[in-house]
Length: 343
Image 1 (spheres, one colour):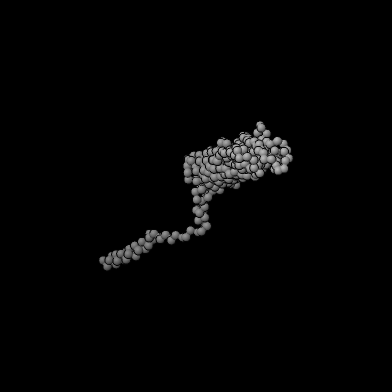
Image 2 (spheres, rainbow, N blue to C red):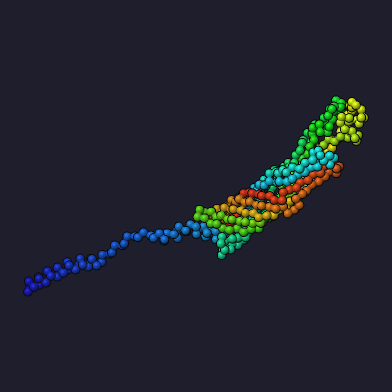
C-alpha cells in the first residue's frame, strides 16, 4: 500500500514537469513581424504635401486684398519736332525725329477682389491706380545751332560795323544763331488699370501671379522753344557784290544792315493713352500679416489725344511744332505691400 502511494506520487510529479513546459509554450508572446518597406505609390501624397500647403496658404488669404506699391517705369518720349523760320524758310528751318528718355517714380495702390476658386488659376479681379513723378526735367528734343551764345551774334555785327564792309557780308556769317525745344513732363502724371490675376503656387514658399490688365494714363507736358536769327535789312534789290545797289563797276564798298530777330514761346499738352499691360508678381507666402511682393511689368500704350501740338510767336518770327509718336512701349519694376491678415 505504501509502495502504491509512492508510485502515484512519482507519476504525479512527472506529469507536473511535463505540463509546465507545455503551458509556458502556450503563453509565450509571438514575435512581431519586421516592418515592410513603404510602397512607392504611398509616398506620392507626402511629396505633394508641400505644394498642397502652398495652395492652402493661398486659399487662406482674405477675400479682399488691399496693397500699396512703389516702383519705377522707363520709356522714351519720341516725337518729330519742327521749327520754321517765317522770315526765310530756307534758313534754320528743320524737322528732327528725336526722342528723350524718361524714368518715372511711381506710387500707387491696388485692390484685389474675391477669388474664383472653381476656375483654373483661381483668378481674382483687381483695380489699380497711382501717380508718376518724373526724374528728368527739361529734356531737349530739338536743337539746331547755338542760340544761347551770350555774346553772339551781337558782337559779330558790332565788329562788322566797326571794321567796314567785306567781300562776304551775309547773315549766315554770324555766330549765335539757331533754335531749340525742350519738353518737361510735369509732376503727378497718373494711371489707372483693371485686370485679372492668376495664381501659380510653388513648393518653395513663393506665390507667382500673372496679371494681364488694361491701363489708362495721362501726363502733362510743357514745351519751351527759342529761336534766334540774323536777317538783312538792306534796301530791297541789293545783292552781292554790290550791297549798296549802285550798279557801279567796280562795286562800291558799302555797309550792309542786319537785324537780330529772336522769339521765345511756351505751350503745353496733356497726353492721354490706353493699352494692355502684363505683370509678373512674386509674393513671399511666409510674410504675415503684411505680404511682400516684387513685380515686373510691361505696357503698350496708344495715344488717344491729339498727336500734334505747337505755337507761333506773336511777332511772326518762327513757328514751333511737336508731333508725338502714337505708340509707346513702357517697362518697370517695383515692390508691393499687401494686407493678407493673420494665419
